[in-house]
Length: 262
Image 1 (cartoon, helix red, strand yellow):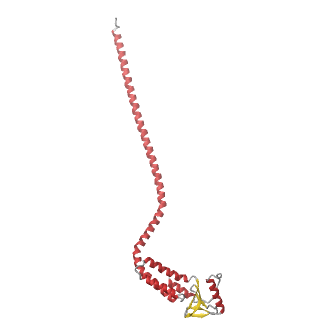
Image 2 (image 1 turned 90 degrees about the vertical axis):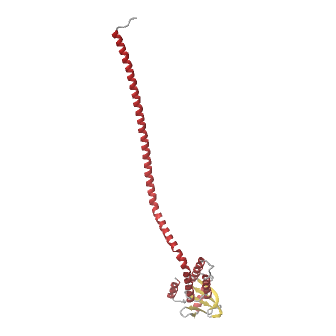
Image 3 (image 1 turned 135 degrees about the vertical axis):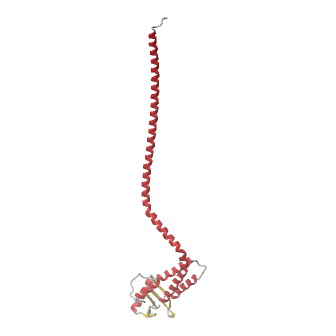
């Protein structure tokens, strides 16, 4: 077999070497391109992940701001209520701090109330006086009873005062012995603490108690008729109506009695 001219062999060899070098270069370029693509993909993934994290943080920030705004409004609404509750608690603490002193002073206070009640009954018109004084005496014994609680003593004392005060607001009728004349029974009519009257069972005689004189003053026929009307009203035998009767005490005296009670 004949070989080509030497220079041709060299040319062929050069071309072959050139082709091998070109293929190697192309492989290197492809590898570099793939590396660049991978690097770019990794960078883009990092950017995307960073964007997601930023978006999450922004969303959390917006939620935190909204929660802060809501809580601020809620706190503003609660502030007056909390202030009132604080004032209430302060008043209760103050009351509790003085409770012990109040309990210590209560026996003396009740004794004073019973003493004033007795003085008032004794100065007042003597209607139902035995009954009213018996109530006072019962209270005096109760206050000296160590077995009775302070609450019960106070309750009974206040009840006695209420009973006395009620006498000034109602109308009452009853039968009993004539004050100053135990041998005679009469019908009594009381109009609050303004008027106290009696009428004999036959209806022919009667009187009005005069506080300033401390005795009965006789009534004329017209006043006797008014007393009979008042007795019927008090016993619910006729409808309420105005009564034209002399009063037992001046109005100013009635006012002073009410002030003494207070």
